[in-house]
View (tube, rainbow, N blue to C red):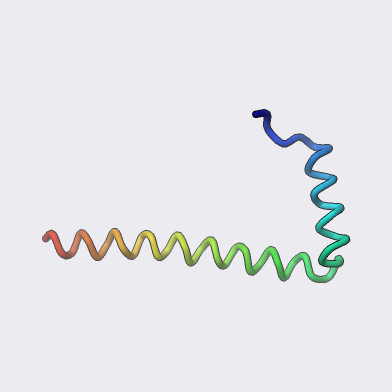
Length: 55
């Protein structure tokens, strides 16, 4: 499988603008970023609790 190039990214961006509209894209990106951050924090939190149980 090859990586995504510039033409593919432009097509994906164009489809996103058509689906969500120009004003909604920052809101969608913000929500996605917060979701990823929460997921990472949850993973780190589980590791910390396991370390506390072992000590």
